[in-house]
Image (cartoon, rainbow, N blue to C red; front, side, top):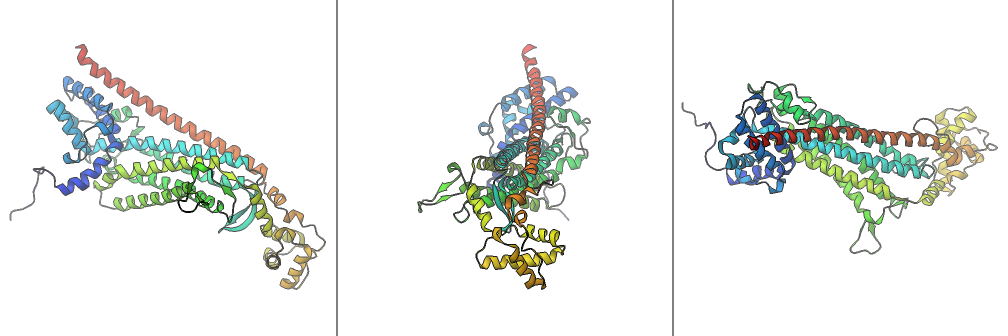
Length: 501
């Protein structure tokens, strides 16, 4: 029975629908890949030349043209979906300039290899930039915390007053997770900074037995061991998106708190004018617009991560994973960079209403836990019984409009009789150590506590963490800059040989 299945390259032009969807989509991502494609092509031709696989004149012609293209912005290069994906536009350009000499670029390498390398080159630069922004955010938040080590406030859980604390202690709770995500991003940089070059389609190529030359020339620390895995792996990109989403989730939590606290109902903080937007209709309103951007961006990154996971759930060795990764991952990281920079500006200019925070603390019942613990220590009763006594007293005080700081021992004895049938003998006790928020906070001297000494220790630690992040980024950037400079210098020397001959 004769088969109707067609084999071999397709004939004629691509369908208009394919051009307007698939090829247009891929060409929209060409600016992300442009520099990396150029560097990957240059390294590949230099590798072919050193092996003697390409005639020297042809290799020099290719290098000279690639150096010319390397100086072009992506917007100036003739990427055109009419010709297919970006690689096809490049091939058409090279053939128009060099004829069959351009065909040497394909030796031992499928089209996807250059794009895989280019994506890694672009994303690793973005990762370093994002870590730098986290470093700046952590410094800004740490500076804000340092200015408010002694600023009293009622810390909250479920948006309900919980225990007395300080604004400085509160702010530092966002520095630690941000720094953790920055370290994860550096780990993902190291994982991503491995080369797929020389992997062929799935099982390597007979032309390029040593894969380390191109890897070293492009600043990769090593090659990806398994050739099939090298060409098709995406798990590292998933982790990159997850860490970026996690980082913005932390920033979004802070943004949501600040949005609530900047309302008239709380009036704990105020955003600087430059981070707000006026209402067109209502003259009295100044909206915390920047915080809406942060919160929305967090949701967008969660969506990009989820969408990419959905695309990635396919049989192995399929192009759809990477076709979408070329745009989705860089755009997600770009958004994370911009939003982290925005949050740095917010925390660096934030105005804190210390008087309003202290007043809210005085009006509330954040001392309740300490009162319960005081009763345990003083009266030798179990915590549950002490909890019930304080709970009864707080409820009665609240109904009578008595703030927590003015609860008396007599009120607690009355509560004890109501709850347990016996007095606790607290009427003559000095309850100030369990009622004064500043005294309560001073008792939190343990690691990570809100006492000024504990917060000062964490401030020093966070400043050191920021210094470490900066050092890690600078080391990696210096190595990448050095290898890029060396690659281009070697290419220029090869290109100049033709003029000297």
